[in-house]
Length: 512
Ligand code: KIV
Ligand code: ZN
Image (tube, rainbow, N blue to C red; front, top):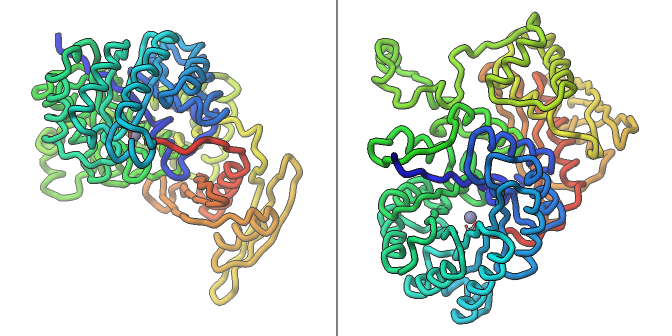
């Protein structure tokens, strides 16, 4: 039997560190459920000591997820570790992930600690964690830029104290595949007790090589765990992308010789869910999950694929969740057909009430849009299965007038803590007028740093999906809204961003 490659998903922790990608508890729970459906081995659910919100999210995820190990990040100190262990208490299978920087630069400038102090802290923290939980991962932050001799000393000691997984981060995305692969290989060869731990890779994408580096860590270095995120989400240029790693190892099993448990047919639905939740749009030419990933534009390619699909396709689109039949439902489709399609798309709604609510919205959409695509359904349910109970603002209706040569005017009706308000404004265009109308009532003072519109299913009949990124007092949030009317989608996205800005966040500085 082939060796197994462990897939460690950190979308909810490292991915969430992207500017504006922060997610609510309900959103995280929903993504965690989807990751479990995708059969990832480990879900890093957050960083418990960073905020009470993160603590509660990890706890809630640990309570409901049974088939994946739930992990919390912790700095290598007793307080963080105890807090993470507390959050993980309900988990059927839990893991503590400790990290401490080991590069000369980080030790001197960030930690202001000597190498001996770092060595001692690493050792004692793993000893402390091991008394609380059996499954302990240790990461020497900025590991790839650390002195190999010092790293060997630290890693040998933490394995001796009981660390079961050793993860070697390329925290700043500096590595080159061959060099990173050999770096891991050398560590494993030099550390006498290296065989007592599973070796893991964690690569950032600053030079666009996160996936290549991770694969080299597996192939050359012998790592058996890859840390990755859906859509490669992550701060700066992002992390190693889960869908690319998984499909590379699966498609080239002849080369890697490794098994994976991931159920690839849920990849697309997971990618869509993460993109719609965070507002990070997937580029059309993104491998595996981009809109063009299986589109053949040139006549020669189309002809070849029609004759024999493997002339130009190395992955079957259906294997990663793309459906051949893109027009799925319409106005006359019933609740059962809708429910069945949700299941095919890998969207599990837990209660009949959620399904009923989503079905009402589906019917409403079908009245306004003749063909309903998978993308429409995913956008619709992405909003539906998240509770909006604690949100301050809700969109109700909008009217706007624009005419060549006239200044556009908009009037937006929305609720504030359940009370209906109406606000009017002019603007440079109908979208600008609508958002100004909302802002003139709310007076958030937030600066808009990004506005983007994307046609969900590619034509003008499509729903528009709008992302709005707001910045206020050092906080950055993304709001997403979808509707066949892009002015309405924009107003929904703006209100969604305002709701996120209102929710208190008291987390400590993001790590790694
Ligand atoms: O990039 C990094 O170093 C990290 C660690 C905390 C594992 O995310
Ligand atoms: Zn990281």
